[in-house]
Length: 250
Image (tube, rainbow, N blue to C red):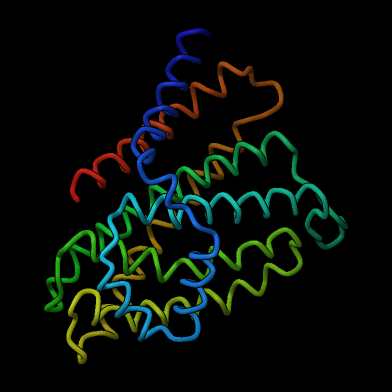
């Protein structure tokens, strides 16, 4: 038990140490201004983002981590307080423990998936006369996703989650607009690149969703704290390594 607990603590400390020097840069107003700019003036926003050239570590700490936490926490609370409406069954509230573990896994895998998505983009872009720079790919993917994460707070009322669909579609359009200024993808190849890269990323998202669902379904109230930590540790290690390696590339 002590060894498992120590391992979990080490993983958490690894994550903290990786981002510690950027924590003071977190600014809620900055997030809102960036989301507003990219929602209503995406072309101008992409030019500003390109000039800023934030590192992967800075984007994680200033934008992705806080937004992912808020979005997932809102959905968790919404499921527990309001539940979801199921035909013939009425309102159903998922088990608290399973929902909590699923939230943690979704945060860890979701943040790690951002780096994987950027890696996919960086590998595909050169085939469309675009840059293979990982940092540029990460900025493109991350900032195109920021509005969806911000609007994800409506998940606190599950019935409103349907509104995430049009927001998601608009995020794809924002991504499309950013392919040229961020990666240099030629105008005549932007549509094909956008479709191919997003489909590739969608496959990764589906895999992550399946993993989250299968792992969460194995966590029942009967599991001991030690067993839970043992199953969460590989995810913590994977995320810590992903963020650490990505930051070292800067």
